[in-house]
Structure formats: C-alpha cells, structure tokens
Length: 487
Image 1: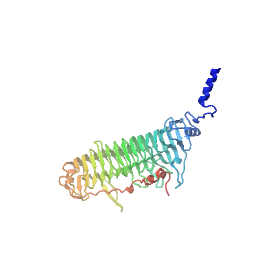
Image 2: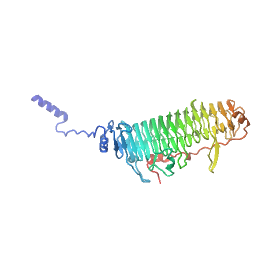
Image 3: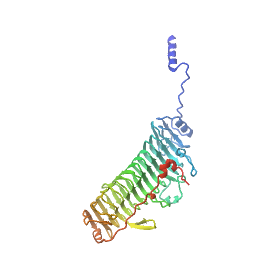
Image 4: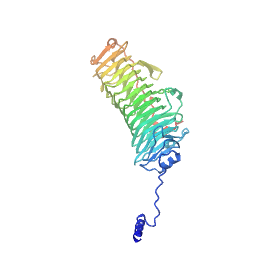
C-alpha cells in the first residue's frame, strides 16, 4: 500500500500538484472533409506542417483561407471540387485580393503552403491567390474561371507549380463576342500572373483568357512543358526579371474586337529570357516580340503567325540558334531585327513567308512585306550564319544599313532560294562592298532577280512600347490593381 502511494506522489509531482490541467488545442475535424463548416474549423486549427484532407465532393464555401505551412489535399482533379462564391466588386472599390479569392494561400517562413488534387470553380476575381515570402506547392490542380484571374502568386520565395490546368471561357468561336468593354468582373482575363516570385512551372496548360495567358512580372521563372492556347491579345508576357522556357507551346493567340495588337509572346522591360524548343503557332499578330530584352533561343519553332514570326528591337544581346530552328509559313516576315546589337542568328531555316500588308506610320498608311529576314540598322556586332532561306515571297534577306557603311559582312554560309519575282539577298541604304555576299549561295529565280534589281525595298518601323500591354499599375499597386478596373 505504501508503494502505491509513492507512485501516486511521484505522478502528482511530475504533472505539478495543484496546477490547473493542461488543455491541448482542438485539432479540428479530421478525415476527408466535405462540409464547409468542417473545412473552416480544420483550417482554423491547423498549424504549419499539418494537412487538411478534403473528400470526394463539391464544397461550396466562401474564400478558403489556408494558413502558412498548411497543405490542403483533395482526392483528385474532377473528384474534389472547391466552389467559390460570386464575389462582385464595385468600380473603384478598394478590396484586398485575399477577400475576393476562391482559395487564399498564405505563405510564411516555416513550411510549405500547398494545394493538391482539387478542381477550383471560380466566379471570383481570383481563383487561387497565394501571397507572402515563403514556399508554395500547387500540384495537380485545375482552376475553372468564369471571371477574373485563375492563379496569382505574389512574392513567393519558391513556388513549385506542376500539372495545372487553368481554363477560362474564351474560345476561338466566341472571342469576338467579348466586344470592346470587358474587365475582370465580366470575364476571365488572366490565366496565371506571377509578381516578384521565384517559380518552377512544370506541365501547365492555360487557355480561354481575354488579356493574358500568363503574365510574369519581375519574377524568376523556370518553365518546362505545357501549352498556352486560345487566349486573347497575349499568350505569355515576361516583363522584367528572368525566364527560362523549355518545350512550351504557345498556340492560337486570338484577336479581339478592340483591335489591340496581338502577340504569342512578349519579352520586354529588360527581361532576360532563354528558351529551348519553344513553339509559337497561329498567333493573330506577331509570334514573339523581344523588345528591350535579351536572351538566347534554341530550336525555336514559329509557324503560321499573321504578322511576323520573331520581332526583335532595342535588344543588346539576342541569339536565335540551333539546326532545329524553323520559321515557316508566316505572313509579313520571318525575322525582323531593328536597332539591336550583339545579334547572332545561326543554323535556322526560314521559309514560306508570304507577302501581307500591315499598317504603317501614323497617317493610315500601310506597308506590304514578305521577307525571310529584315535587318535594320548597324551590323557590326551581328552574325547571320549557316542559314537556309527559301520560298520567302518578297526577299529572303534584306539588310537596310540606315545610311551606314557595311565594313564587314555579317553574312556567312547562307543559302537562299525563291521563285517568281522573289529576291534572294539585298543590302541597301548605305555603303555596300561588292563582295558582301560572297558566302551567299543563290538558287532558283533569285539569281537573275538579284542581278537585275536596282531599286530599294520598303522596311518596317520600330513598334513603340505603347503598343505592348502595360504593367505600370501592377508594378505600382500590386495585384490589387487587377481586382477591378478604374473608372
């Protein structure tokens, strides 16, 4: 009996005699959850490192608020649905983005905030919105947006985005129905926006948005695999920061009734962009614009774009290289390079460029061009080598020196072929040495046409930056600027 009392005393001493009992925090509901109130309670109780599991069901709830370091996992895309409410924002109303998000993910210094294996149906301004300096993981997630932005990531230290499908309502058949007066409260406008984030993007599909498929602003992005298609105005825009794109396809970028210029991709604002096996097809405007940006693009495929395949201007370092590089069946031009230095184009095939008229100047003029390559300005730091130019309707290669002297030819080992009235290789508007084309091999009609040519060909003009989509408000006001248009 005495021994038993000793054990009791020791136990009381261990827990603290006379102290109030220790109460552990409520862990919240457990197991696969389907009721909104259970999900809210579980998230409120969750701590960094915890996982909240959702069931195979449709969960209709107000904005799902996920704390830092917490993972939310469903049973699979098309199995677990998070259904956001329709959050209408009045014009000029100041609203925090997390208040108009289907799922709001807070990032922090401890742990990875994650969303996995769910479909988000969103008529909200943001389908999924992640913010903060911390780690983020989105894996096997579909966001179906009828309005606003499908996915926004603001300031993530490390964002791993893989196997995502971001879809809006726009298609090639209904793009014209957007009219000219639409915004994020009336249709889905952006598939993915990264602002000041470091992100690894893998196998992401984006389609059906009215302004941008993907908008990467002052971010560090490594993107491999995926498809961006049937978005209006712009497929992918990289504004500032860095981006590495590998095996990404950008297709069928559409024109709206606003008649704003259309681009498959835009790299601008001192962005440093590299790509490998990037594919850009069927843009209603230019395939890819490199404006005040730098980078090397290897094995690029650009086909059937309406206003040039690749347009480079005001670049201090641009390379297009690789024997798999092919610019085919584009209208207006295959490659335009203007007012740029340290340009290297090697190994490419540029073929089948068709003549087409395009607006020119500010007085309603137009210019008709169908050139494989049009190089404007100084050529001292330019190399055009090991190129195959064939079937380009107006000219295979045009060098316009803008009054300069061609001291050293930038051309080496170029073959050019054409039929009918097509010219092969022309240098004009400057002092041109007689042997500038010594390493050019002309075949077909270009032999006689070039020998007889004595005129001058019209050239394009630099596209002003005002034609490109502006990110000024986004840079000034952050993602809140996307919540509602200003009146």
